[in-house]
Length: 248
Length: 311
Image 1: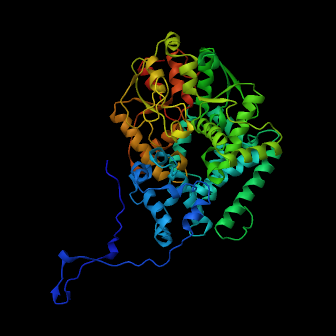
Image 2: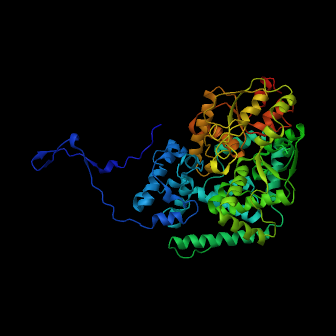
Image 3: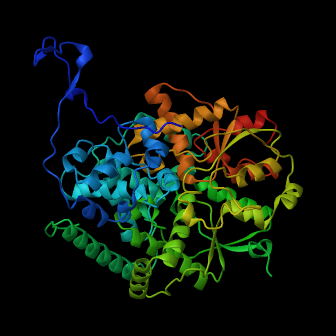
């Protein structure tokens, strides 16, 4: 199977001239296409350490650039710009501005762990994708992605109650990510569900809305979890050279 | 020495959030076949969420703590050495907690700190064995005994067995897999195939057994998930499957949701049915569709079962 490789030459850097003579030599036309030279000045030498300071990023230094991760990647098969090997390379080189060109798709990792399965060096690329997505948000390069909004809502319910209720996760997520509650596929799903058991379905819906599923005697666990998360977040911000954050 | 067959006769049961929500039919059918097979499920009282993918993304040690609390309850309250989780997410996370507690000092420190503050026994690696519903049937009953329990069977129903991501990956949290003999394979899992074949199904050659349904982003990046699911549905149909058998609530609801979404958004229709393997085993043992919650699935398969003479 071929290793999918990102083309490092961008279309805008490929130049052909209709009429150009250099040192008396005619270099006009398609046959002597030029590649615009590129100068990288803004290396972030701390980039690898910053990613390694976030959960999941710890093993990034182990990468050998074999490309097994990208080759195995579920998302890469749908979108060839999604290239974990390339991003790991950029992070290790400190090429921050290059990495930022792909800032809006890095969060799309689906955590299938095919990369981690394929990696011969225990780099844990799935963790690096998560660490990088968090890094982008912590550094305010991107707004909170839909994935983060979902994770936050889910975690909030777990920390509060010990359990989640999936209808409530769905409703709150759609609201918080600014999506309409009424979607054609959702209506179709609900219709198919209530076709056979309208009474039971409505009962379940009402029950879950009235009585949140809750783990009993959860308060102490909740307090300890909240305290730990706050400590970890403060440590992560410090590692990235960021100040204290207001609220959660 | 106690055999696995003896050990799995009575296990702690951890249904998890999904089996009490969208995956109720999986819960119903698991309990129904436990009764038929005389396997005893001791549900863990007052369990909490395993942490799922979402809490892991926010703070991995908190996910480890949440799973460790469940394991601690199984050991100290339910008084069992084995905990069975049908949900791939729960199963995966309990396994991951087990691995982290064995190998990572930080995980041990955080779990100890929070468990003490929450005033329950600290779980230590190795106290409880975590198994999937597939292990539970495969070794608690075994193929020979299962064959004797089949009444009517699946009558040659063509099935694509779909295991998803979390049952086999990442490999290091499943040290018992890929050990040869009757151990499970992480590259080509077969426990579900084995059980459904005994139940009278014809398993089709299905290349996407461990493909990803995009479940992690089923709502946050729905278009991606729809494409991934459509690939799986179309591959199953191309392989001649009438049914995709599932063993993961996230996969199951993902396949059901995006089958509809693919039709609405991409005008791609697929007709393959999505059914939990426990429902299929129940039907094969002569249970009625209602007893295994077949009518509670979004994917409508009751008519197919009638046509095939299975019910």
